[in-house]
Image (cartoon, rainbow, N blue to C red; front, side, top):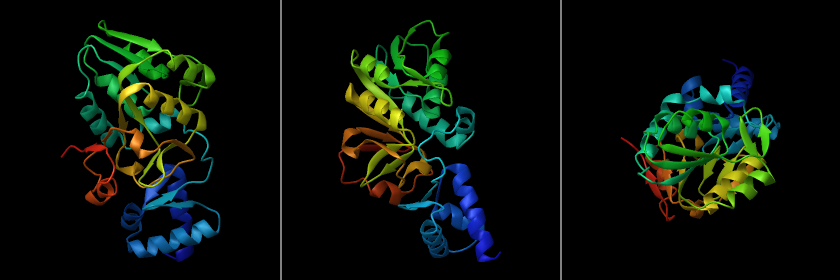
Length: 253
């Protein structure tokens, strides 16, 4: 494959997925990681994508959320693994927050019908829990984002001010040791930030593709998170970058 053709396909892959890691691209194109890094440097100089630690992120509409149906089919197995691990940290009579991420929705799908209070800005999460007899659901309103079927904006963050929860379960588009936690949408980032502030403990739900990336809007520094729940594909090097932070990383084997 010619260099120009490889770089064109590489850009297409990053734009389609939103982000991709050097190791992943190296396997796809059967070239060395150093070759991929040179490709990414060249493509960034041409303004076609943005490099991140360990990979690259799309600059095509990077301030917008992908439609929910698209996010539902990305990394399903990894997100389900994270959700299954997260549910283990929910106890009877907990008051918890679930954000509008697909991982939080997967978590809602497998939540046992226990006496719980769940606060959420997600229509999908609220509907998923509507038939549970023992779970009390509080859906905070605001401006509806059709792509994510969630509520955001000042009304949402103001409504969250009225609550105090034991645990917040939030996801992100990027988690970076130096730049913290980030999301693709500024309004979603502000909601996630508020969720973390009103919780005793914050659990970040992040599969292996989120590590080393920085998305458009910052949510919080790493220090604001108590636990990071990830999947088995997250490697030791990705985890090692966070060893100096007071955060516990939970990774199922």
